Length: 81
Image 1: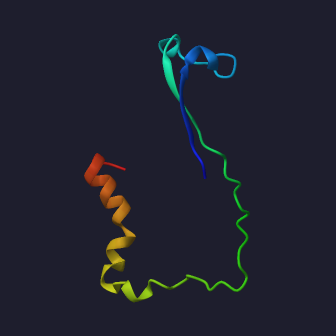
Image 2 (image 1 turned 30 degrees about the vertical axis):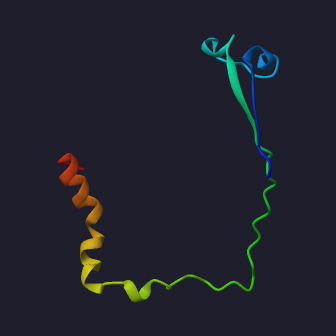
Image 3 (image 1 turned 135 degrees about the vertical axis):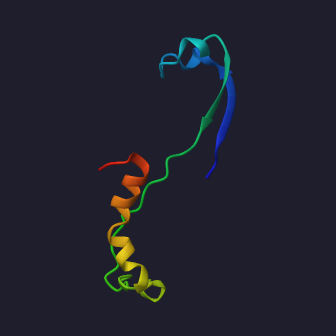
C-alpha cells in the first residue's frame, strides 16, 4: 500500500473539506492512504468451535465468588446498589 504525503496550503483544501479557522492560511500536511476493501467475513463451516477451550484453566473453587463479584464490586466502589 502506497501512502502519499505532501505539504500544501490549507486554502487549497477549503473547497473539499471544512477546516477550522485556526488551520486556514497555513501550510498543512496532506496524507493520502488508499482505502482497503474489506473482505466479507464468512464463517468457515469446517472451523472448530472454541466452546470449552479454556476449561482447563477453570478454578471451581472460585465459582462461588464469581457469582457475586459484580454486586461486591459495586458495593465497594459506590457503597450501595
